[in-house]
Image (cartoon, rainbow, N blue to C red; front, side, top):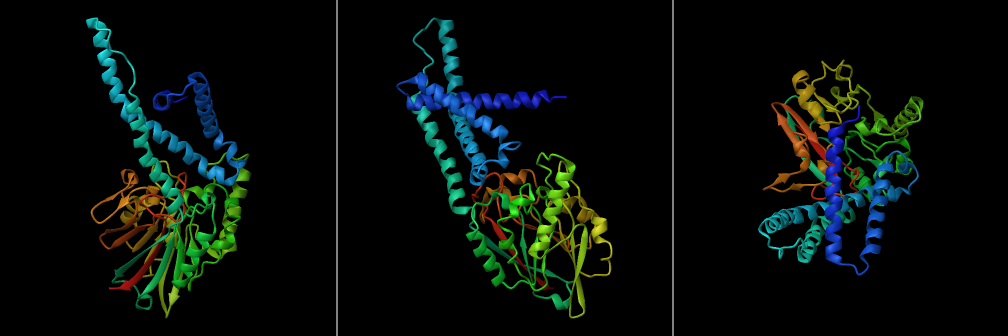
Amino acid sequence: MIPVLPILIFLTVVTLLEVYGWQVVKTAIQPQNLKQFKWIYWGATIFFYALFFSYRPFLYKYLPHWLSVYYPMFFLLLAVVKLIAILFLLPEDMVRVTRFAISKITGNDEITLNRSQFLSRLALGAAALPVGTLLYGMIANAYNYRFHRITLKFPNLPAAFDGMKLIQLSDIHSGSFTQSEPIKKVIEKINEANADVIVFTGDLVNNVASEMDDYLHVFAALKAKHGVYSITGNHDYGDYVEWGSEEDKKENFDRFKSIHHKMGWDLLMNEHRVIEKAGEKIALIGIENWGTGRWTKYGKMHVAHKGTNDIPFKILLSHNPQHWDAQVRPQYPDVDLTLSGHTHGAQLGVEEKWLRWSPVQYIYKQWAGLYQEGKQYLYVNRGFGFLFYPGRVGILPEVTEIILKRA
């Protein structure tokens, strides 16, 4: 059954965006040949929509890589301009239509429906700020990596692991990269930190394993004393791609898993590893993607956790931070530290001492940084890469360095 209401809402929003976008551009520019300008404007608009809606099923495979990365953002920027036009011009239209109706009732024909050129140009000027900000985020911040360093204290941490350095990466999304040199430099910096353990908490690719072809050797350079461990995220399964058959999808996922092996990463698929030092042990538990609502639950915590009861300290790798409140805290109180990603911090927000905000906080209770409930901790990494919007504003790409101390 076709969902009528969502379609009607979508069509209404698109109609408003396009009608006001046209009105703003036409009034602000006032072209000499309006008819020719109109054909060009609406022809380009229809072309952009056709390209956008055929992008995922057809063009994603055939477009040049850089265009497949940046085109959705171009489409979004146009939508932002038109949305701002609505915010500026809709109130004016309501006033003008009301005045026009009154003029017809009273017989005063001096009142017309002419649109203000000044207001149209003001709307375009106002749109320049968010559009310029988003462009800046693409140019300056897409690869502007930040190291977040925290120290956590636990009374049950074995003495042999006091001072252990753990580095977390998450949400690489290699299919969105258009550069490799900035990545090589930050990996060199990570290796210089001489970590005991490096962990990756999911979303290595956007959709398909082949996205790692140009970056496999780059990330294979990561080294740590006790190894590099990884898990899957929701994008790693190929669930958002139209496959020719289930066999094609399975073949892609098998190739995806082999990439971890080729890079020297230990992929934890609902399993755990015991790290031993000076006769003492900690457990590193890794599960497949587990989320609430529309997110898939491939993860099997009971399988991964089995056999760790006698190990005094446990670290869980789970891609989606929703897992912490939904299952980890209520059912597994012996998990000391959970490491997640997934949210990207929306790649947009403000993180200052006096203000910490991102639109993603209205979806995820834990969306970036450190959280604590009782003796349990959750850290949500802001992500190494980017998705859809090829940049970052306020929420920069992150490498997390965690020092574990014995309280």
